[in-house]
Image 1 (tube, rainbow, N blue to C red):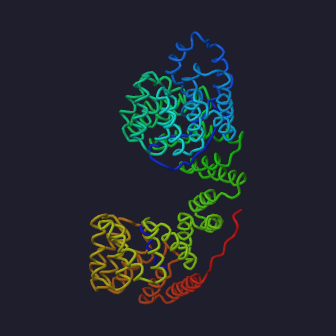
Image 2: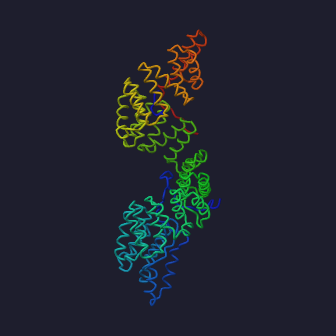
Amino acid sequence: MTKLSDSPKSGKGRQRTKTCGFGRSLFPLHFDRPSFPASVNVASILPALLACTSMRHRSETAEILRHPAGHLGRGLCSFVFCLALPILANVCLAQMNHIEKAANLLNQGQTDQAETEARQALNNPPTRALALAMLGTIRLREGRYGESESFLTQALALDPQLLGARTSLGNAYLLQNKPVLARKCFREVLARDPGNVNGRLGLAKVEASLGNYRESLRVADPIVRQLRESDDGVLLLATDYGALGKKEELKALVRSWHDLPAPPSDDLSFEFAKVLIACGMNSEAREVFEDEEANVALHPSAAAAQTLGEGYLSLGLLDRAEQSFQLALTLQPACAICDQNLADIAERRGDSEKALAYLLKAKQQEPENPQILFEFGKVCLERNLLEDALPALEKAASLNPDHDPYVYVLASAQVAKGDLPKAASLLSGLLRKHPQDGVLNYAMGAVYYLEGNYGEAESSLKQSLKTQPDQVAASYYLALTYDSLGREDQAVAVFRELVKSHPEHAPSYTKLGGILLRQHQYEEAQRNLARAVSLDPQSAEAHYQLGLLLRRLGKVNESENELRESRKLEAERSAQSDVRLRLLLPE
């Protein structure tokens, strides 16, 4: 079947937190939802602070507490603590009761109850600003960044001195991909309190997110020691060092990572490993994954197991990746992305039937997922299951028509179906977007050749080779075009050059041998056809051409053996074209 797609140590087992996906940017910068470090016990801190605040020292204490140092905690900071400090001195114990309860509940992850308490303080003027800030923090924790922005903006309008709220607002902006507004917030925090660690960390993250890695390092320089003691701090430095090619500094961070005083979170561990992989530090990344694997064994999590599998897969560690994905499926059977990744592993091992089984499961779970449909259709196409491939590929392309690989492989399927005009139409659309693309020009040239439009085929194939000279497929089809135009000498020259540069390309030996047979150059023809059969014993054409040659040489018995093998292979190929999709459940 003709297919265009044929072109050519420490920390193990410690409690961690959330997980996230593995495959994103080359140098990822993680902006997580705010988390509350275990070292900060809001419920115990607030009463202690209130107890030592006497009436006669209230104004002095308020001034001091309006400018918190900004404790650097896991994720971003203990926002509840930072938000509460600036107005504690001006509020009596009874008024603070709801805020204290809200802080305690939020610290325990009980967001609904925390919101109920915070709303109880909204109607009390002395606590309204803090209540709004608390609600903004809750929304930030929930990932509802727009609502968080609204609450925090209202809080700052009532009390501009709430540095914790302003830092939170900066993070809300950053998480909504509003870096200019985030930068403004963090700069305002630092203008009021140059020693504010959270404001400086936030500003450094903004610069890194914009690709200003040197500026990010400059901003972070005064707090590098503190950054090396937190997971998100180490990740920020790693992102900057990696993007700037500072491999020695990045290597030093690996030790800092393993020596962190608090266990790193799952998501930041995977992001850190991504930076290491992008910089070619695969063995160091593997150590990070192995720490995560030990943690997942102690604290099983489907999301963490899935992300761990993606990490191992990115390193080509198929057995460990498979174990992780199977664990994720055990914990969460309806995991389409796990089945999709297991299909990828099966394909890499050459087991396309098992790959199809996994993809069929994934497709049943997410029938509108274009990537799953595409992978399913592509594997079907590779296995000559055209009637199963086409509907999946057509749907993938209709769901995401601007994704060029979907359209390209759909064109390949149309070629396999024999609908050359439709294939040409699809490829023409891609060429309008990418007129100099070598692969697209090759594909268009191949379709022209199959249509018998040899002049256009020659033009497109030459353009393809001009862009990418060492293309096997484009050279192969150009030689076929010359042969069809009756320019046998040019075809022979291209095929000879092709087998010289790509001595394992069996189809070129077959075609070259066939032309030489017609030219009565029997000795060279026999060498090429014998080579073709040895490289591809399943080629019916190679056996057929060799059979014809042997007959001309008077070797009747040998000729008949080759022709008989050719007929058998051709019958098998024809029977295969009628096969419908039959899948076995993966073991």
